Image (cartoon, rainbow, N blue to C red; front, side):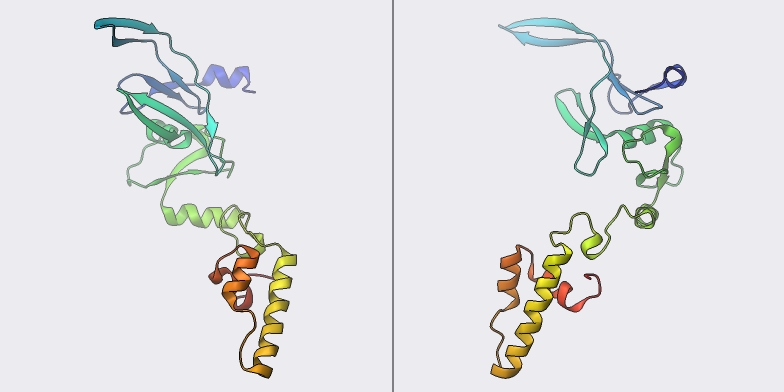
Length: 196
């Protein structure tokens, strides 16, 4: 819920490149503006008035707020943090990424955003733990510690049998298939220090 004080300080500006159809606010809200829409129906040109309104935002798979903008029948999905950055923040260095200073991906207030390089954004994300942790610390990891232990034990058994019989009974491809991961993931479990 947005406080009354915050709403009183909210500033609205036109979204660049949207022909005056949309505005974005300094607190990360998006609205459509009143406009007339022309279309042809039954071979007659018809004009309809469409009242502007605050638009509902959705959230993408990474936790960022996004909005679908339609201008002249062209649809474009945009992240709200980027809209706020383009509209309110100077980007003299032509930096490519709008970064959340407090690391809360849906906090799109202008004072929480800054333009940064890809490198700076990745370093900040890694520093706070929201990006590409290795092994089981990664939120997208398909393996948990129990599965990692099983894979390591299976591979140790493989190595033992290979020494005795001169061939491994379970190739990495079979192990990968059994755990529904790639062969390179199995290699990382076996040979790297990422998986504990």
